[in-house]
Image (cartoon, rainbow, N blue to C red; front, top):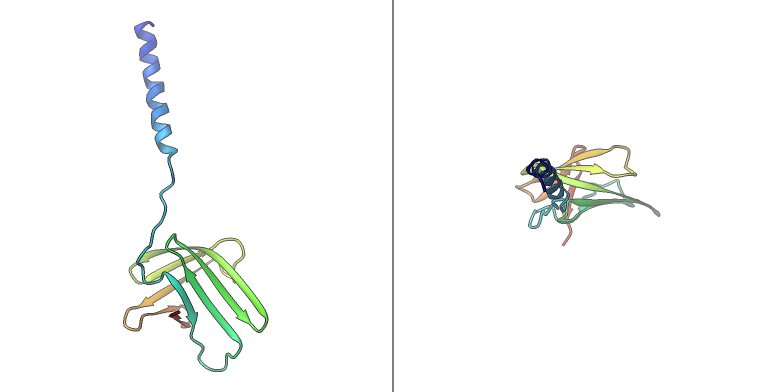
Length: 125
């Protein structure tokens, strides 16, 4: 092989190795140990008989929201992240409850979650 051919081949090899490194597995999210992991149930404040709501957070950054009124059950899902230590940013995938995203806030003093409508959720035992 001529020396000039080797010089042309070297950049191609470097590009191939660089691109192969970019094609590795996608980093996965792991929120193990986060206080949000688990199921949170809505705390009804009178006058809301027959309505149930809950969020279930998984350590892989996914969540499910369930809303039940009478015999009607609606389930939504998506991903969640933590923009700061007490805020959970939820983004719905596909079907949504009338909005694409929402924030929940962890209240250290009570150990509950609150949404922007001031609905409170308590962690299931």
